Length: 551
Image 1 (tube, rainbow, N blue to C red):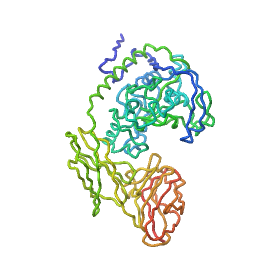
Image 2 (image 1 turned 45 degrees about the horizontal axis):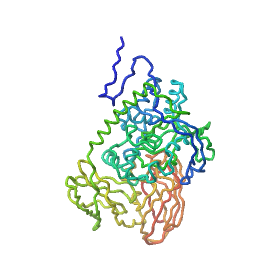
Image 3 (image 1 turned 135 degrees about the horizontal axis):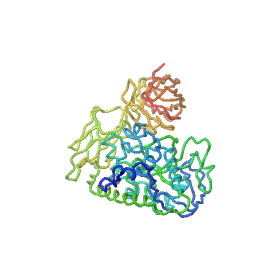
Image 4 (image 1 turned 90 degrees about the vertical axis):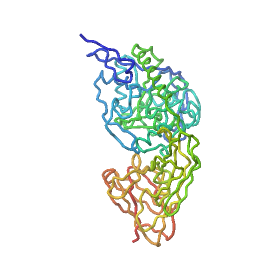
């Protein structure tokens, strides 16, 4: 005799077995919201890939109220035996850790069945909606880009359905965005930060570190939750670089040779993005910040018994999660009036003592170059002064936070070192740039040197690396550079005092951990102090150091 035990309400966050052993599990049909027919201007002049702005007219359709959850996706995998990706792209550990072991039901960022299903890939999302359509007889599908943008606007004309400011003080009530609680967790667990990484974070707290239980935030005017954030959402379109071939009826664009699929919306590890911003990914890419929701032509169908049961369970979990958040301690106030003095190779910081009596101390953060990400260099500092004896010759910044119950405040004002010019002839470490855009500092895998400049796909196209140099003698100098990259690159232009003087190709070395010293053209340098700028023209290369030696 087969005995079936219901899932206890005390273990809602665990995996529930199918109700009848041996039977194929039936789907939990998504809870849908009906969106009215209407027209809107799709696109934006802010980005070339969002042009041309064009009018789209959509018929009535319905969209998932929530992003598809782990519990819903579990029914699909159990019913079909679908082989999901077993590696997932986790943007942690200075952000660029890459693919690591992890799947939709076993990854480091998912802790319960009511978070969005992540690490699934476009292929896995498409397989889910196809199974859902076949099993229910209703043509469920992935939304199109036009449907997503229309729904995300919520019938408003502002930049976001809650206003025009992505860092609105109340944004944590509306979306699970990059915020102070996420920044705290990143610094504690990975020594990485949102500061100087894309667009920073909102100065608010929602006590959600990564992807949240769905539906925890206020819905948009259409009654949809987590449209702008929580996880980025995989769509049905084949991605195109612009809207030249976009349809006026909002159907998903399809192509026989589809190299990338459209993704829209931000996630827990980004600030809120404009609803018009577009993204894409390969069909087999599985990421920890990407999930999906479901669409259907026409009005929302009547909820099935399984859907009603899912909604009841979700409400209970939401209440549990809200109680947890309500019990969290408040974050301390920011440190004020941080100042910096430099003398004899030392940097001394001073700041005002916190007025909150239960602040236990301070943490000191420093970056490797001005404008790059901050890393912790000192903890458990009790006094309101700190001296850094490990001064570097380049320009970099400090900031200080107050700590209470292991929660740190937002950052103080930034203070910047003066730096000094780097001697030429000689070798210049890549991280000694006094200004960096389009690249981050990371520990090098090279046999020589401590750090290198890199990024998500290496140093970015249009990145700029500025160095202050002091040339001892006028003459011609040969530029050499220590690089690593998987393919040939267009390289970079060298500018001296903003005047382009040479362009240097970068040859592929075989990979990001395969380092080679390469040489470029001779360049003429006059004696004295100058600004040397490297302007990147391509991605997929990293830089450990460069050298200028006279010939």
